[in-house]
Image (cartoon, rainbow, N blue to C red):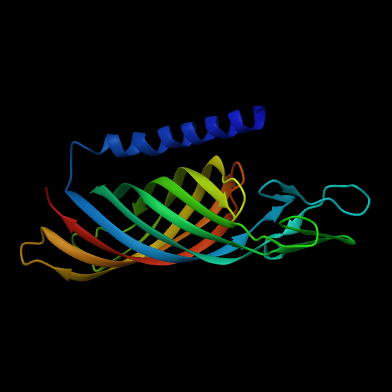
Length: 229
């Protein structure tokens, strides 16, 4: 409980740090509303001593950590968000779905752990649903330049579901802190420069998470539509 409280407190502090610079620039500069639609490839990262309700216990009765590729397979993400760009600060809020692909058997020492009752394997389906806030800083002005590298942070609050035929579904509420990075390339701009469209690389590395959710290195892309209000 204490670890979760500390984690949530850290997220709140980082959120305040991210929002304050954005508010400081609201009185000057250009402002654009943004619609973003994207998808990505999620590669498992980190170490795990459990998956769902299964603890990885070896033949000596000790809980062991397994590398991410010994627990999860790569998966994918889909997302849509709305936001605003002000003086190179882009703040977006949106929904993200992640399909979590896991292995069905886990080797821990001489022990083999698997899903389902003894003598059979029932592989559950894991799905992560998030509400995500991203605060990114663009290092060039997209309203006048054709590209903009960016970096920032992402905060997510969501729920992972674990379902399997013949079993009651389980749900776990969780949070996530990520580091964002990438670059945007302008594809089109209106003559008055009040509207433009970009193709963006949308990448992030999950730094901290709570609950049952796995962490990932996410490599993806998105189409972004910008317009002056």
